[in-house]
Length: 598
View (tube, rainbow, N blue to C red):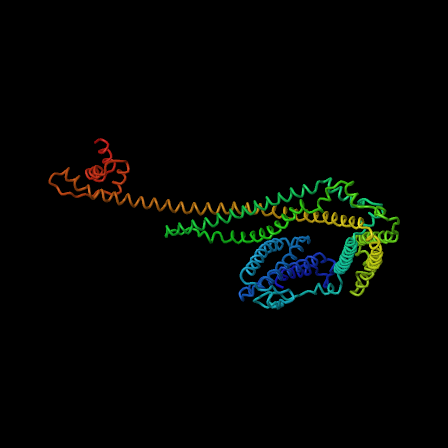
């Protein structure tokens, strides 16, 4: 509400400029009204983020750690929504807010990560869902010392927004249409993809269509399967996979070694700091443990990530061993002539003179393949039609924006959505047809398998199909995991190296601080020692030196200790220095000339 005050004043001042129009037309203020709506919407999101953050701090004070995380996460979501809105809204008035929200997002991200880590390591409280969070009462959102009646001056013009509230905004209905249709398209797409994958898996479980292809072609490896094996051999994927596995192992070892070096350096700095403080109680330099606090927090996060990655690496290494020992991988290296011998034809069995009629099973498989292709085509058509559909033109063709009511717009939306009804019905019919077709295929395949069981050679060919397909799929999964592992280490290694440099800099600064203190202390001790020596020398030698210059006189001296130390530092005999200064009444220059001439 407080943020709306200056905007409301601007609208009112514009209205007052038009003396001839007591009830000004909103056409004139359309741009301003739009700006106001965008401004209010953005600030509403930002204030919600602020309110949730404030509540998170109250939860923290009450030691409700799980609720703190939930509130912080909600505050981050509101801030992210506001940031996205500011980025896509061409309003000059939102630039300053966008900058503030961007900074808030970074702060909230750090606070969420810290709260989650503290809860995981110390508190272990469950994080409530958004539905479980108590609603923030409106009076807690904004605190204003004065009542709103004092903030807003009394109005003297007609309310310029009186007609706006009655006019529906077409953008709202366009958003409603896009939200509804997009949701329907996503749901039907997910359903279609799930059913297609389910159908193919059911066929793969009974070795279709490869077993039928091998039987019908009269022996030899199915052509489609051989093309996959040939591509595998041509790309030398097995050798490349082994190489990538060893490279991943090297990256993992480098990451772990770098991590251990960082930990060792940190521990060494702690031990050095404790030992130095024990030997120098007066040292008040930076505490190593306090300086390392943030670094060690980051390091703990890295340790968890590296631990998880290491578990995955171990699994990959075990699979690497199987590449050289498991027979299914050796099949991928056979030539076509060798594989053909593993797939005998229907007449190769002893005593076999007849062949099975597989035409019906073949037709069913072709029909299912066509069904899948039609499904993909319908989905692509639906998405393309939606992308090209002009919903605004369709709505405006059914309503008059000047007189239309909400009911008119709702009816126009229903009309627009009917444009896609035929495609949705066709897709649902296509998906529904799959169940019956797959059941027929499995039933026909059962009869096919019963006849094939009489021929053990054909059964061994089916086993080879399963082994080859399983090997190809397993290597595909290994390649995916290897890429994920390499991507992880490509991100982690630079971070570890940067942290290592940071630790080195901190270590160097701590060492320099201790050396500077040690140097200052050494100089202070030396100066104190020199002063004590000079004082002792002056007191011991003054009497005898004066007595030698003044026979019968008393041995008294007022020699300056500092001047004695200065001349003694020039390698002159202390006794002679004291005598010279005594003779020349502490005149350093005269005493120096005397010493040089003697």
